Image (cartoon, rainbow, N blue to C red; front, side, top):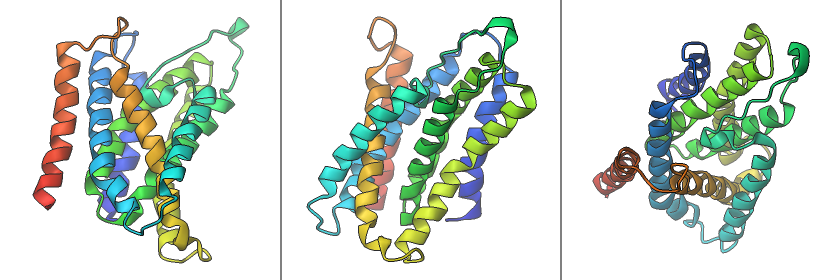
Length: 240
């Protein structure tokens, strides 16, 4: 993967997290639109690119691992409080006591690490932008939770940096697997991708079905969703 793609993945996540110091208040409508667009784009890329590629090896068990990934993401969200979807849940603590949200940090980093793994395929340029866009509101939510947990500013920046390097780390690890650099695990690469596909399907569909508080799409969000799916479809048709 080209260096500029790694830079985009890092800067999107780190920049999205750092922006928590610039924006105040609870009204983040623009971030919600970015989330809707990226969720729709990610869903389109998953259906049009990742799923067909995963079945190229004629492995009938890929579908099982897609289900495993889908269910695994449900488990992760029990610890992350839905930050992957841009949800922000802050909790106040008595006397300003700092309480590190360990479960949220670990689950979100693992989520980002797994998201970077499909990029080792080498032909998923569109996915780079989908993941990058998806990580902007997720990182913003993480930064908000860290600050809301009374974590010091310097420590918050460090944890955001740690989250930002997870997707590139997932790419490098997966690239080593697919090239045979780590044992013979490259033979199971499509199954690993199946797990990632399941995670993508859960994240993207949850974003698409979670709309406003009354569970109805507003016009701006509908346009963002259609634009995301449209761009994914256009890029797919161009490659045919």
